[in-house]
Each structure stands twice: as structure tokens, then as C-alpha cells.
Amino acid sequence: MKFSLKDKWVLITGASSGFGAAAAIAFGAEGAKLLLGARREDRLKQVAAEAKQVGAAEAHFHFLDVAKTESVEKFIAWAKEKTGSLHVLINNAGGAHGLDTIAQGKDADWEAMFQSNVLGILRMTRAALPLIPHDDGASIINIGSVAGHTAYEGGSAYCAAKAAELQITRTLRLELFGTGIRVSSVDPGLAETEFSLVRFKGDAAAAKKTLRRNQPPHCLGHRGHPRLGRHSPAACEHRRPHRQACGPGRRR
Image (cartoon, rainbow, N blue to C red; front, top):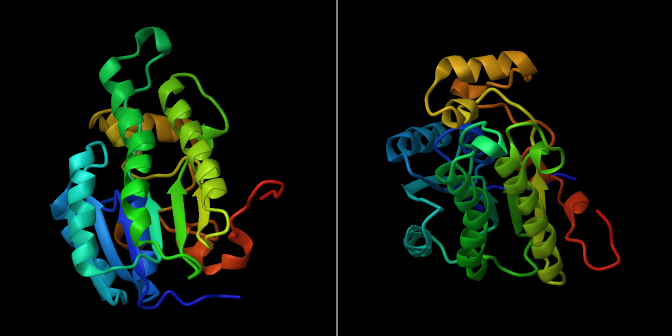
């Protein structure tokens, strides 16, 4: 059964590019009302405009750095001025920095990955929970990675961070059991977005080399955003009965 997202409020972090921007377009096409956050406000403005073009009932954007508690709190205060209720929270902000071995790793890269991928999810969820209604079909969707399930050389901190995201998701599911709020993790594999470009600090040659070596699926869709398939955040939200929150003694 497909559930309508029309006029539902959806908050997306890291919405300026990649999966976040694609999610904004996908939810916008379903007539949702969007609250978009990221550090690059110029890109957010473009995404919001595109979301409106494809059918978003509303699309608002505001600066957001999930690595800073003050920024998260200001963003949620702004969100409260728009609505008193969130139907969907998508914790997408994150990313990888470098591909160094543990022996060559840099503190700044490690700390950046844990701040955005781990603490960022905790901060955003803590701040947004008061806006998410109980027993009203609401969802929290965290964007994880196959790296949270399988390690690879040079990915120690990123794999650890995404494994932490998965455990946060599972813990939150238990903590919210009985509230009617669904908690899910969408764990993509390699995709052709700006992810590798950010990882290699703007080195396009290194980013392309990684993509060629691993041969990711070509997933660029509307205006260069990744196409979101049947396991996308929007698709998960449509298939509500299959994403019910699990409690003790119940399996996914």
C-alpha cells in the first residue's frame, strides 16, 4: 500500500547535494513540505527551487552544520517557526575525509567524520524529537552505508562511523518502541555523487580513479542528482507497513 506524502513536513540534513538533494527532489515530487539544511546555502537555494518545480508544497532552507550543537539548535528553532510537527526526519549529513591507513591517519579527518556521521545524527535527532508526533505515522530515516557492515582498507574511521550510525538506529528503534515512530537506516553502496570529491578534498582525478576502480552504478538522475530507487528514503516512507519499528524480541 502506498501512503501519501502530500503536505507532510520533511526535514533533510545535508540537502545541498548527493543523496540529500535527491531526497528533496523525490519528496518534493510527492507534494511534501520541505525543510532543508546544509552548510552551502547557495546550493540549498537551487535544490529548494528544483523541489518546488517538481511539486513540493513548500521548500524552505537554512544554514546547518551538524558538527556544531549551536548550529543544530538554531536550525531547529528556525524549523519551529515553520511548523510544530515533523512527519519525516532524514539524517543524511555526513561524509568521508581521506583514505589513509590507520598508521597514516590524521586526527582532523577522523574527528570530522565522527562529528558529522555520528554526533551529528545524535544532535539532530535529540533536537528534532520534540517535533515528531507519536502514533501519527512519523519516520526517522538515517543514511548509513555498506561501510557500516563491511570494512575496507583506508576506511577505518569512516567504516567505524557508519557502524555507529547503524547501532544508533537500532538503539533509537528500541527507545521509541511503542511510540509509533518508525526508525530506519538506508545503507547505500558506492554511487557517483560528490562524495569522493569531498573525501579527496577536491582532487577530481583521485575521486574519478576510485569510481573507475570500483565501477559504481551510474545513478545520476534529475539535474545531476542521484536517482533514488526502491530502497530510497522516499520509497521506505511509502512502504510504511514494511518498516515498522521493532522492539525487544522482534526482528527486522
